[in-house]
Length: 482
Image 1 (tube, rainbow, N blue to C red):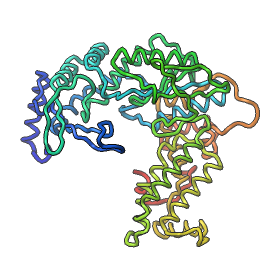
Image 2 (image 1 turned 45 degrees about the vertical axis):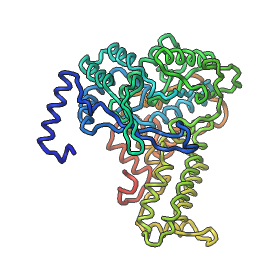
Image 3 (image 1 turned 90 degrees about the vertical axis):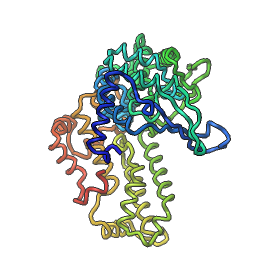
Image 4 (image 1 turned 135 degrees about the horizontal axis):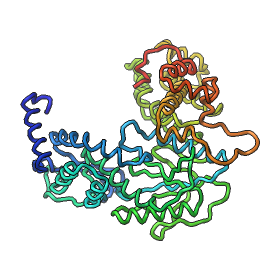
């Protein structure tokens, strides 16, 4: 609508936006949200089996974007490096890599590492407005920005849209606005106040490269870290206390504890009198975290990929779709599931064999080749090459992504680089060692660690190393490089 309106619409929006910034008064339609319910699984007579989404005015998003562009630089000064959610240049992949590499180093140096995976009850819906404005003032966020955002929330109203009817309008006094561009950044600022209060008197013993690390976060997904059980209990207590003080509540049912230690865990850790469950593995940001390394996650990814492949059986059996189109669909809809966070994996001969077998299984399903036909993998590969020409196999893609991630992290200056390159106190056990994350880098490049670090600092030189190490034939790039 804004684009179709041309210069006249742009000038009108400019006048409205400037007036909001000057007076803090928002047009009424820009403060209203329509709540729509979407059914989930289960008994639809129960309210909890519905998910709600809020629809807000499209022109208002122009103003929200203007405010966001001014708020983000100030938020970046406030938010700790441990928080990777809703921040430029950060991702879930980075945080998964951080957790895996940190665990790997602590295990191999025979050091205890305890995790508490915090889950808040309805985190975004419980943000206490007055505490949010107080937090923005405490961290010296621009007064005009704070005032404009506060006025938006003070005048915001919502109504439920159901059966083509709009219900009564009502005000919300808690929670960030659903569907609003500002909400993720405002939540991060609010959570930073809680974490600062919780960690004010906490002295953690987990460190790498002489840098202490008490937690890793992606929005409200928090992995609290401790060097022993007493320290973990103290951390949970402080987090629970700080959260309660700011209107948030930790879900004792969904919060889990995991220990990477030789000694069996004995201490009971509680939240509001309820004992937290101990687990041996946990799905953090969509990836399985366990002291068994990457293999459980790779096996899980293979299972998910196979399930997605089976769901698309009508497409693979359709004779009117060309083989090249099927391969594009396979790679965009199926194998992309497998590749999620593959940068964090530590590969060995067994997992590499399983990856190759899974890829061949996908191609056989796509080509309609039964195992009863006794068709060799070489013949399957030949048919794929005939259909789309030379291509990069799945294992090579995993290697390329991991090598590119290594180069990207080496050239950075943040927490991910510290964890990847930093040392942990303690000695490694005697005998044959488990393969480490960076052992793959040395194997694939044929370089010593100090040489990989030097070459990775130069982007163009590292690109040449990646091409040489993966030994990939030339191909049309749009199949995988999206």
